Length: 350
Length: 132
Ligand SMILES: [Zn+2]
Image (cartoon, rainbow over all chains, first blue to last red):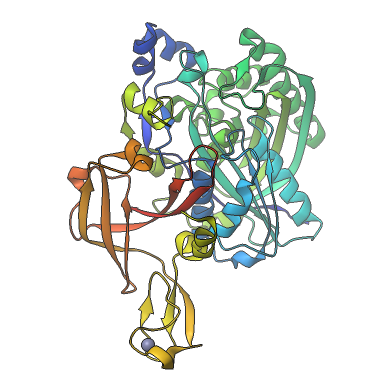
């Protein structure tokens, strides 16, 4: 049975901050930070935005592109590491806001930056086994780095929603494969506001080992090589890692550039590969082949071998909802405004 | 805000569900239990209707001194919007600078946080409007 993406939508908050704005506050060289991380700017959520509002905006864009009955959505999973509530699912609010309640199952997922792809896997399973007609998988985050930490230059906000189904599939999921180990590279304990990380330990044994193993194993399983793919989207915690992972795997810069958005929007965590894939689907042609590999600290990778179908030709992409037009609408803010929006400033009595 | 009241208002706050009088056909947002024109004749005849919420600014005000919960957002814009569907709603305009708002400006609904009961309380979500 053909299971795949029926529609998708991405959303990125409008505010941006540049590395030099952050660097100036901490007495660091902004230019070298920008170069070292491959980051020109990162998105900042407005004071009235969180994972739930981002998820709803993305989900509504996905729904606006196709004509389906929202009561046919049988599952909604929201993957994030910054759910607004510790207890009370984001997914129920999203389900209500898109008119999918009450006949569905809903839950929140958490796996650092790969909770959104885990949601796609679950929805694919439910759709593939005929348990539901459509499933909605969302990855969204409003992540924070501790003030002055290297993460503060990259941790940003955004998300994407995917509708998975069997009918009018625009991109078929040929195969998904995951690679999981216990690796303490990045974590946040319950009740802590900011995450901790293992510094340099986050590179080789964590990100690269999982991304490379996952991608190589997937290609071995489906019998493909890098040149068989038109596009590749790798998890992008900064602008450098995904390019370097691509090179190690044998993919060219051209194959990854379309789905590489971290240099302008920052690391949207659970939203990262999903927004990258959305940017690729915005321009993809029938028969294009796409590899997507997510990475979540802790640690694991989810990989996907995807083929674009003829349905993409009639799919609604001629609107203001493409990733490039959403990203184009932006406003740069100062560190002071950023600190205010992110709740880093405490008001009297608050 | 009381949780039960907010919970009852979720359909209108999340999805712009209003009502239409089955007697005279007049539409209302926020929803009404009886039609103020038809009174008793409308009892049991009020139907739910979902508005798209696209429309234009009828009038607006720039808020500089806000209640505590909105202090982080000043200055912000509160406007009365006339939907293409004829009804009017009051809401905040976002993604727009106070100097850029004008009467007649086209807007569409957005889903945002509209309040919370402090750091440990419920978060309230609902519609705001953004330039279309
Ligand atoms: Zn009436």
